[in-house]
Amino acid sequence: QVQLVESGGGLVQAGGSLRLSCAASGRTSTPYAAGWFRQAPGKEREIVAAISWGGGYTYYTGSVKGRFTISRDNAKNTVYLQMNSLKPEDTAVYYCAADPKINEVIDGKNLNDWGQGTQVTVSS
Image 1 (cartoon, rainbow, N blue to C red):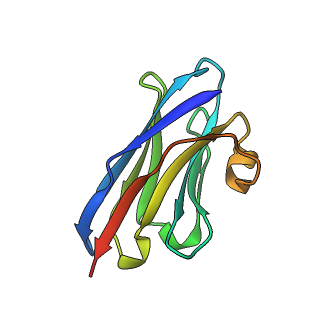
Image 2: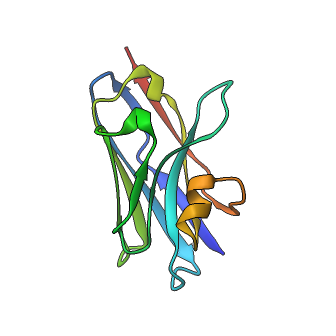
């Protein structure tokens, strides 16, 4: 099991940027894919981006392509989400999750390892 702690959320004006971090601990010696998800009030949780263990494969949901970048530093056991050109509709609680399989991360239905979430609020 991997324990995950997100940080970096906050309040930003539309067009601004934030960088989220997800620090992992626990069974980090086992390779794991990771992903960022978000849940806005009254909406279902959705995947935002995912990255393979080596970083060679990344996935983005359509609404964030070209604006968000997922990356990782395995030496620091940390996954990042750089968010640029933020829009009010990006407002949500952002969570990170991990799984040995990238397809499971992208699917999101059977994940066991989640962080507590960090709030991102984008004002217009």
